[in-house]
Image (cartoon, rainbow, N blue to C red):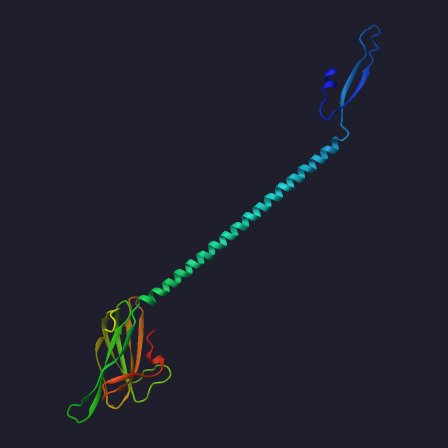
Length: 242
């Protein structure tokens, strides 16, 4: 008993009472004191407070976890958006480069009249105008020329290009690229009965190394007696980009 009194349980209250051993009157042993730990008055309240504190700590831990998870998710979204932007930029740059390569490397063929002169008609005192066509490739790569078309007119062409009464010649001639003004003289002669200044127009058809069929148009006013020419007609009649 003395040990129990001297070493009480933490947060414990004790209830003690004397035990009267009246059944043995001649027993010299003094009355026995019995002590039992009593239920703390605030034990239930303390337990309730402990549970509330546990619940509060648990809620706090869950709330912090949710916040961290939301922040991490937001970070992943930002990273994904940045990667998507750079991927889109790369795809766009690749597409632009793919479209740019044919424009830089393709053949650019220009054509026009040359050798303008008048020639007498056999067994006649009359003269005719004779014009040939030359082609120049200013592009980096070769081209293959397939067709030459030429037509004369007394009136200057207007509107959109249209070809009605001309003559065409078929070829299969390679034209070297990147050689500057190094014309290919085509074996095609176009004749006109008009020896006064008038108009000569047409086009050449060729294939570039990308197997694209292209047209290069020309339109000129020719002066047969002088053997010279000058550009004429609207820009569409001299278009070389198609």
